[in-house]
Image 1 (cartoon, rainbow, N blue to C red):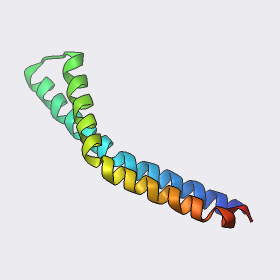
Image 2: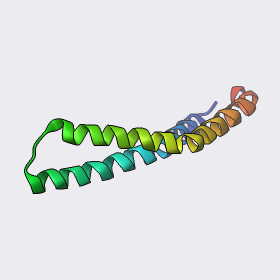
Image 3: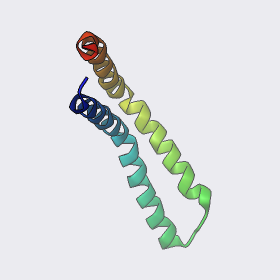
Image 4: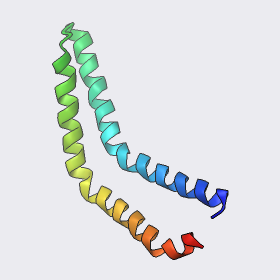
Length: 89
């Protein structure tokens, strides 16, 4: 195992992690901005008003993106196990 291989392997894992988390983070960001604008416009500064909609929207995004996430994760894991003999050399 060369240092370049280990760096490439770690890079691929980090890229997959970021790609998988993107739908939830994007939805959370969008809902957070909308709630913040509404709070600024109405001057209601309630903590739960910003927290609860973000949690619910992130949960719904996870439910909708779950099949895609599982497909990406199983593909990555399958490739990892299929190439494991090559990695050991």
